[in-house]
Every structure is written in C-alpha cells, then in structure tokens.
Image (cartoon, helix red, strand yellow):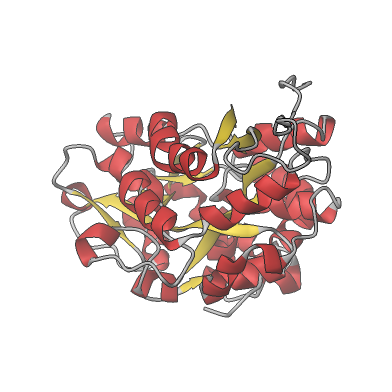
Length: 353
C-alpha cells in the first residue's frame, strides 16, 4: 500500500471573565482566581463519560466551567460555518477539519502554547503539519465478519470481492467517515493511485463489488442490526464500531489486513472568533497530555495520538495502536474534499440505484 498524505443559528451564553476584586490596595489579591468559561464543541457519543473523564478534570485543574455543544462532526461544522462565533474549541473529524482549514476558519496554532505537540506520533504530526488541527484520537478501517456464516477466514480486502459473498456484505455510505476510506480501498484493489485518476479506478472496482453489496449503512447501530438479523455476513467498518456490532456474539470477528489500512484522525481547533483563546490553548494542550489520552483510551476506546501513552495488548484491543497504527496510512482529506461532490454523484448513480 502506497504512502499518502494526507453551521442553524447557535445561541450560547456570552463569554465573560470576572476581574479579581480590589481590597483597598493597588495589588490584586493572589488568592482569588479568575472565573473562566469555555465552550467546547464535541462529539455526542458517550456524553456522560466525556463529561466525567475529559471535561471534569480540566475544569478542576484550571478552575474552569465548560459548556458542551454536542453533535456529530458534520452538523457541528455546518453550524460553525453559518455562525462562527460562540465556540472556543471545536473537535471534528479530519475531513471537516481540513475543510475548515481550507476556508481559513481556524486560528493558526502557536506551537509554543501547545508543548505536548512534541509528543505526537508521526502520523498525528503529519496531520497537524497539514493544517487540519491537533489530532486527539485516531481510528482506522477494517473488516468485521461472521466467521461461522462465512465459513472461512477473511484476511484481506480482496476477499470481499469473492463471489461467495454475493449479496452478503455492507459498505459505508460515501458521506460517512469511512466512505472516503472505502474509495481508497477500492482504488488499491484496482491497483491504482487514487490521487492520480481522481477515483476512476475505484468506481470500476466498486462496480465489480456491487453484486456482493446487499446495502450500505450510515450508522454503526444499523450495521449491528443487519448482522443480528442475518442480512449480512461481512462489512467494512471503523474500528470504534466493532464492540457495538459484536455484542454477545462469539463468531463475529474483526480483522485489519496485513496489507494495510487507512486512518481518520479526530482533531481539535480554535475558531478565529473564539472569545477565550488563552484558555482554549490550555484545553488543546490538555487534550493531548499523556494522562488525558490514557484515560480516554481506556474509557472511550479511542486510540491515543501521542507516543507517551503505553497500552497493554488487552487495553489496546482493536484500537489503532501498535502494529495496526504502524500500517495505517494517513489520507489527504484536502484531495478528498476536492473530489467529494463528484464522488457522491457517481456513488449514488452506481451504488444507490
């Protein structure tokens, strides 16, 4: 596998800071802390865990009050485009971050204010250097299948094109996080560099795969239902969805082909119109601290993006960590975003008809 590089109106409480009260002296009282509010736009999954394991420790350490703006990446990004004020930090999927960066929506980050950047993994540093923001989590795509029903092991992407799987697999919709990664996989199957032909060979490979596709999916919960109902026997999924799909089954397995996989990084940015940029910088740096990254990995099953976090094999599970991370290629989402409108049109005509 070749190496590749890779808003409705939102109403929020206005931001304010209370100055320390004077006590008849020209010196400020050093034992009175400044009250700080921070608005964080973040993902809606496992909200209670995010509050307790990510937000609460930061609030305690920095005497801050965090207001969370919750939702999926695409919806929150659209809101920010429509109304760029009121958000101090925003966490997005890599495709949306790259889009926002191309529209000059985010602060050009000062690395001296984010010392933990020095600990980013090579792949995460590559994404940061591309301008898409600071990576806070990484996931990758793999194959989930019912070994009992398939009757054999699936070890490579090419196995999904086997005629024995006719009408038995599901793939992600092009508009999902894994959709563009599916395009890269199809292009690899065709033996072409997707950035050279803009996806032409990928669509030919998808046309060849179509007899095996019973339906596409937009949510991992839908995929879990398809497996439980016996509608499908295999699917291409992001690693974080595996536990939901597997459930109590003993026969559903997850594999990342030795030939390689593709990664998506969730990143954090400071919008240009942020009201509290200094505290926002503290939050960004905190999100990639070793302690926060380790806690998040264990409670949210999100692979760390800093090299200072060590996980046991049991802790790592199916996360994009260790050997899997080593063979997870970054994706050039600037290229993807430039092609996406055309890809969606071609996809709908080929797959959804």
